[in-house]
Amino acid sequence: MKAEVHVDRPSTWRKYKNGLCEDCQAGCCTLPLEVSALDLIQMGLTTEEEAGLSMKALAKRLKKEKLIDAFHLKSGIFVIARTAMGDCLFLGKDRRCQIYEKRPQVCRSFPKIGPRPGFCPHKIRLK
Ligand code: SF4
Image (cartoon, rainbow, N blue to C red; front, top):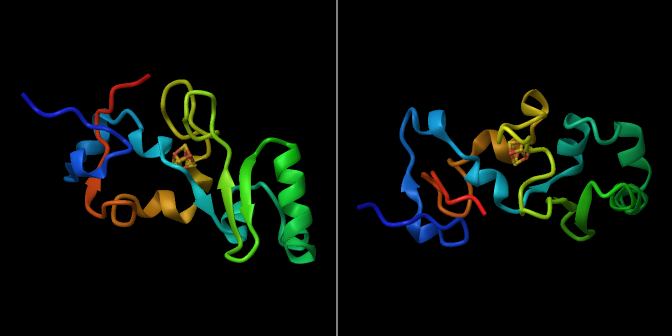
C-alpha cells in the first residue's frame, strides 16, 4: 500500500510523471500562492496603471476585496487568499482552476518549481 500524501509534508509527495494531472485533486492549489504585480495584471486583478501608482494602495484594495491575505512590501509579493478549506480562491468546486488561461507564472511552472521540484502532492485526502 502506498503511503499517504500530505500537502504540508513534501517528503510524502509523488514524483511527477506525464499523465499524473489527469486524476489530479488539485493538491498543488492548496499550497500558499505567492504572486507578483505582473501576475496580478495577468490574472485580471489589477492594471499596469494601478500597480504603477502604489503597490501599498493596490494591496490595501485587494485585501479589502478579500482577494489577498497578505502583501510583503520588501519583496513585492502578494499572497492570494484561500478559502476556509485552505484552497486557492480561484479553485472551483470541480477542483479545476477557474482562471486557467490567466493563471500566474508559478502555477504554470509547478512542479518544476515549488517546495519540492519534480514532486507533487498527488491524490491528497480532501478535508
Ligand atoms: S490560480 Fe488556479 S492553478 Fe493557480 S493555485 Fe489557484 S486554482 Fe490553482
